[in-house]
Amino acid sequence: MTYPSVFCSNCGSDYPKDGIPYCCSICGGLFDFRSGLQFDPTQMERSQPGIWRFRHTFGLPPDLAPVSLGEGNTPLLWAEALGRRIAFKCEYLNPSGSFKDRGSAVITAWLISRGVTEVVEDSSGNAGASLAAYAARAGIKARIFIPESASGPKRKQIEAYGAELVTIRGSRSDVTKAVRNAADGGSVYASHAYIPFNLSGYASAAYEIFEQVGKMPGAVVVPAGQGGFLLGLARGFDALCKVHKQYTIPMMIGVQAWSCAPLWALCAARDEQARPVTEGETLAEGVRVRDPLRGDAVRAAVLRSRGFMVAVDEKDIMPARNALARLGFYVEPTSAIAWAALIQMVDKLPDPIVVILTGSGLKYG
Ligand SMILES: [Zn+2]
Image (cartoon, rainbow, N blue to C red; front, side):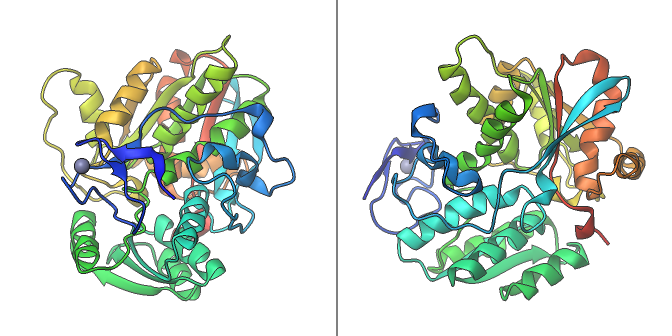
């Protein structure tokens, strides 16, 4: 089975019909979808669990057997705050405690369809915990590389699922180097950043938000490290706009921490050369990514949506975490940067505003 929907964005080759390369074996380029995601309301499968209602949109064989732990169908809750009525998409209520489960479920189903029994992955914590959960569900052996600095609860979660934890001393980028060495040695690299099916999994949140709000949101505020969730959401909204032609996609507001803000720099720089970016310490460990793989695509999605990137000061992160908790939403510091950003620029955003709450507060400590 080939996947003509996925190709090397550098040399144009189709994704191969055998094996699971994480990047193009001809030129080393990044795989992506050849065209936008396709959403067809007549192909919705209402009897399937969670995100699997949208199976036809994933860019995979239409009969791909679902792997599910109950991901998706997360609540959208409204609250009065900052003088506005704001919607909160509670992605932290996914099975492993973060939005990553939408991508892990799709990737794991695809791995099974290709007969994979062992994988490696790298993560600041949430993607690793998520993949470990789905690997356990599917009977796949997982080896997860994380930085030494990753939060204790995330490490414990990964180990409890039965994955092998490989702790790397150094920066998040050093972790990626280590896992790429393992992949170059022959391991299947089930990367949430490289493998594009993650993006079509994330896009399922856009279809749910559209259903739950009852129309297209005016603005969506989301933390961004690689920017994969932002990109998946934007592509999901794009797919909806092709069907519901009266709408345009919401303003996409991506949020980073000042100490590591490459996507912010890329958007702010516009046509100038991007500024050098540090990989500084931050409470927002989940968005500490110095070299986002799909930075240009994220920038294009943000600017096309008339949105922008915001960078949040370190001192504003815990107050934002606490403010969300006072509304009843217990999220990790990484997720709280969305709220810290919203406080800065709520007046610039059209209704309805949707804030994406990405990861559980139980992950932090
Ligand atoms: Zn290529």
